Length: 192
Image (tube, rainbow, N blue to C red; front, side):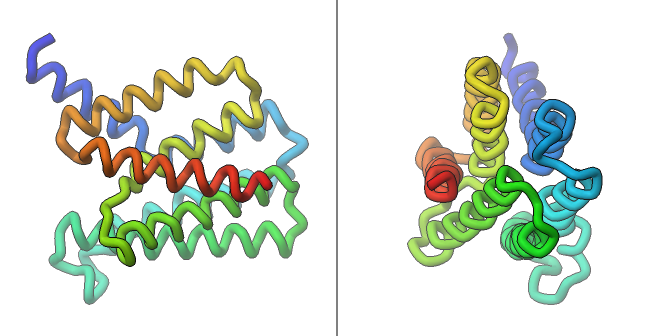
């Protein structure tokens, strides 16, 4: 495969696996196959809080003072803010509306993962990949809620994301590992 084709494939993988798309896909799959986890409004609310609100960083960044004109760095910082707002909103909404324990587990894990990312990135000044964190979370939940038959496809998807990130030099292996650790730690802490 030529270098140009590898880059094109890597970009395609990155676009397909953006965290809001993956979490939305996870939620729809769980809605249809684990429907005891969701009331009809829960699917809409979970997509709103876990996918749509975090994504607002990208259209809002050019118009919000303090983030405006700061390019990718401004988008990244605002994405942490909008993600935290979405995850907090989702967690609170799930508690107030009496959502299922499975859905509360997902919200709690997302909320903890964004705070772990903030700690790594802001406190320790270690760049942890938000993309890796946002990809590993849905993959872990797919295996957890849907069973071990999902392990191999999820491992292949995770490997494709790592390859594409490295191919496009978006992240170093260390950044990917740190981002993945955020998702893994949040998952296991919230599982307990």
